[in-house]
Structures are given as structure tokens and as C-alpha cells.
Length: 258
Image 1: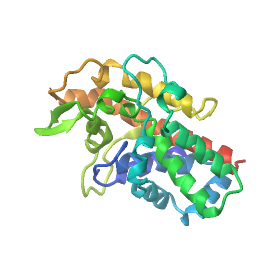
Image 2 (image 1 turned 180 degrees about the horizontal axis):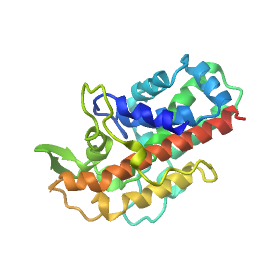
Image 3 (image 1 turned 60 degrees about the vertical axis):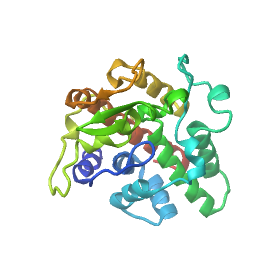
Image 4 (image 1 turned 90 degrees about the vertical axis):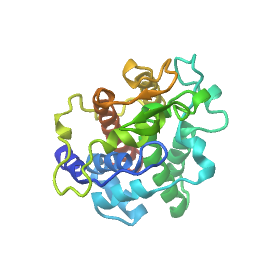
């Protein structure tokens, strides 16, 4: 199944600005999830969303927009001194993790179909979001939104580098052929879902804190050059792969598998 899922990555279109991962990031994660899901779960996902193909599912993930008033639910912002996510401290007014938990509860409940559909869409979106390193970022700078620099001669924030620019470097607009050999990336995400969204967020936190992201201690004014892209592109794609595999395991667990 994995080869089929990854082949989808070769044909996605140009990236556009969005919160958390841009549309293409969400499309990648959901394309992987579609093929990794057990067939019964995939059938139920299709029924909720009124779709029957991977392309349609990926498209729905790319186009889904949470209401503006829920912007704080895309991420988990922490103090700069924090070494781990603390739900009481970081999610007292809601965050991606509380929204994920709520969506899971709705999908497991006897809620109306429309409510479950909305919960499914939210879940597919936010599982990808908590794998974006700057989404487990520092509250004082909005997850890198206030750290300004340049990329290919244009102004950009560090957050935007991870939201869209990293993925956009892989895309050849209007290309009819492969743009990236995703299968060449080592370290595939584990299929087992032994850990939970809280653990995934803490894993992302330590990726965010790694030297390669350039987040810790930066005053801004950095030119995010091709070296920066090469250092971090593999991390971005591995995070999207994990998001897809883990989303599939979660949906299979909730909706049924074989």
C-alpha cells in the first residue's frame, strides 16, 4: 500500500499559504493515510465525506478550512523554558491536542452524522498540524511568526518557511512527472500506534528545538538559503509521513479495521 500512497506525492500542485502545513502538506499526509487505513475505516471515511478515492480525500484535506475563531486550535504554544507540553499550562483555553481529543470523542459517540463528519475533517487536519515543528512553538513569538528573514530574495517568517516554503521547493508547477523521490527517504514512520497525540506533540517539540530548524536563539534577519532547505526538507517530509501513518492508525482504531 505504501508505494501507491507515495506515488501520489509526485503529482501535487503548487503550494499556497495556509495555517500550519499548507494545502500540499495536508494533501500529502492524507494521501498516505488513505492507503494506510484498513479497508473498513476507509469505507467509513468515504461515506462521511461523500468520496471514494484517494485523490478526493487528499483534496478534501487540502481545502478544509477551520473557522478563523479556532485559529488557536491549530497548534500548542509553550513557554521558551518548557521541556515538554503541559496540558494544564499550554491548553487551558484549548489547543490542537484538546481539539483532537474532542474530535475522537465525537467520532466514538452516537453523535449525528454531520457532527461526526466535521469531527473527522478536524481530526485529519490537526493530526497533520501537530507534526509541523513550528506548531509546537513558543508562545512569545507565535511559533516563529514574528521571526522575520528572507527566502530567495523575498521576505518570509520562520513559521512560513515551515508552513509552505519547504514543501514548495519540491514542487514543479504544471509538471506532469515526478518531482521528488519520496521513497528515497530513510526512516519510515512506525505503523504501530502505541503512542498517542500527546506523545506525537512532544516528539515534534524536540524536532522544533533541534539546531537544524534555527528556531532557538535566532534574532531574525536570517536568509533561509538552499543549505537551510536541504537540512530541513527531509525532516518536513518525514513528519508528513508520520502524520499520514499515524492518522491512518487512529482512524482504523476508531472506525474499525481488520
